[in-house]
Length: 247
Image (cartoon, rainbow, N blue to C red; front, top):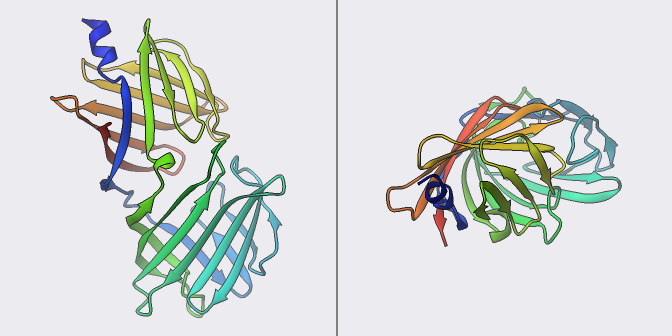
């Protein structure tokens, strides 16, 4: 019976972007007086908003940030690691200032083609008086698009060992209910452990240098065709959930 329960997760899964519940806690940024500050980044940083690369520390995915003020409603952030561009995000605030559209390309944790996408964010608080329109507190309200390599993953259980892989190059092989195993292909995650909780629930705990940064609980539907995944982001103290469909 145990083997059957473990193998119930086997297969390729794809996130249904229409059923994503994003975190309710906002991202807070300020662009003002020639400076760009990311207040909710972990750790927070502040750099000149002059379009040039500026070093930041403590971030596994990037080590420099360049913020370009394109116009009164648009900013473009370019992140690099070891001199290589890993992420570009362009954000354009709507004329009424209540929402914004973003487009991004992200290769910060992929060994293949970058993950690309676009979406909408909603303002929940204004920025300081006199700051750029992009300043303030924002929550992601929806994704208009997200490339398949950012929404697809595969599970395979064999002999009590669960293997996970993604088109972007992340992978692990961890004994269910066993010790931590290396997490490969993601500079922000160093180890992972997995355990079962009942016959249709799988709990994955991700760590960075020994510290828990994320706990994901995957619950299979009764027919096994879908899986709800609840994510506790311990690093940013926020939660989200999404539904993956068996392919």
